[in-house]
Length: 237
Image (cartoon, rainbow, N blue to C red):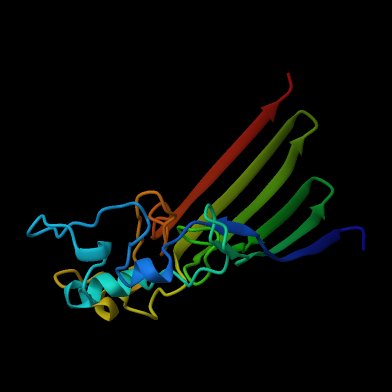
């Protein structure tokens, strides 16, 4: 009694919301190779001769090219400037736990210890904010520890010793990491990414919004930690 003091706190966040967004994506006709009526002349890249009716024959569309085009969903709006409307889910979850103990050993000697654990998880859309299915998922696990001792050696001499430890661990990847090997599924040759980097490739088309996992959402695993020891001896003279 009157020597040991402690506290524990917990804070939890669960935030889920759909973000309304629009995009301009290829139409079903364009995904099938039909660009008739778009005002764009489609030329055979080998012969340099325009295709009839600005339509690429199905026999000349590669399976990989068709699979990449199919990363785009079907249009759901007649708006010529934004023919797709989506509301993909975004979420942010976090658990924050803190505890502290203070111990009065004697009238001249006291100890304390404290810890904080923070575990945020963020889910956000990929290259196109309107499209679902290509989410980025980021997991953090952060730990902070500190312990200290204060000793009054005499009415004029006080010594404080503090030891601190900090560890930050962050992992970011796509929702398909370790689950779907898109490179193999699409039939792309000569490239075999590790499982932690599996993600739908980003497809960018001039004048349109992209699809797939965002190239700006780098896949990485990052760990940083440090220990600090500080001793302060105060002498009043």
